[in-house]
Amino acid sequence: MRFTTLIGTEDLSNHIGDKDWAVVDCRFLLSRPEKGYQDYLDAHIAGAVYAHLDHDLSGVKIPGETGRHPLPGTRAFSETLSLWGVDSNTQVVVYDDSSGSMAARLWWMLRWVGHKQAALLDGGWQSWQKLELPIRSGPEYRPEKRFKTNEIPDLLINAAQVQNFLGNPDYLILDARAAERYRGEIETIDPVAGHIPGAVSSPFQENLTADGKFLAPEILRTRYEKLMKPVSPSNVICYCGSGVTAAHNLLAIAHAGLGMGKLYAGSWSEWVADPARPVARG
Image (cartoon, rainbow, N blue to C red; front, side):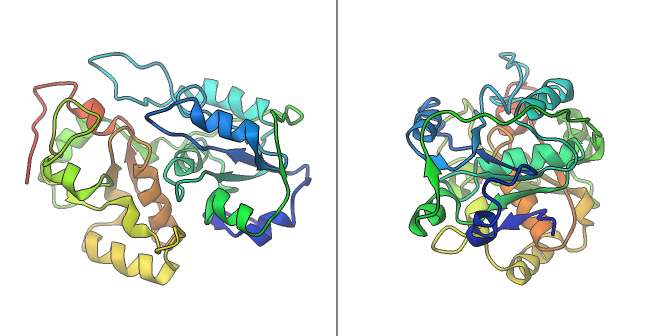
């Protein structure tokens, strides 16, 4: 069985040690960039390798041009996957300790380069610990494989395209940040507060239950169909602060059986880097 959106802890536990399964720890804290790796070294799911948001899942940041977490090139990302022992036959499972807010980035990136056998561990590190499933400490490595990229460019959208679609009723822009950041009441990271004009607030936390797991597919489907109607899911554009938590909404849409939307990877931090781009508040 292939897992393409979410996977439960018990299903993953049945495959610990399976050479055709790769587990990737994506724990990361924006305010303390090295904490996630230290937490990984202290304890992680047995056999997991570590993905650092800044080093492995992002490219070169250019002040005044890119957002805070620009995507790496597909060649560089392919080399990273190869080092992690991932090829076209590998089932990849990603996890974090923040309800998927970080790990969903890697899930989306795998889809972007054509790898569908990737799933996020529902409930993450906390659920694994709660069931007292196998853990290890220290760094881990997997035998290297060769990952061949088959990029799906339609999953990605840039700032110029977003600007061209403003006001177009055939497209929907969803903002995954907290509602108060969307409204421009506060801005804790970026230099300008507000949102992309016409965007709809859709905080990623609303994809989750009280215990940090994803809502059932039918509930997510109802939620997103209400937001989308009558826009096609393929014309839904998701963004956040820097292209990380926006992937959580894209994962929720896919888990609901609605297909794949588009990621504006530069997101708000890239949008406001150019003062000529319009900003809305309220």
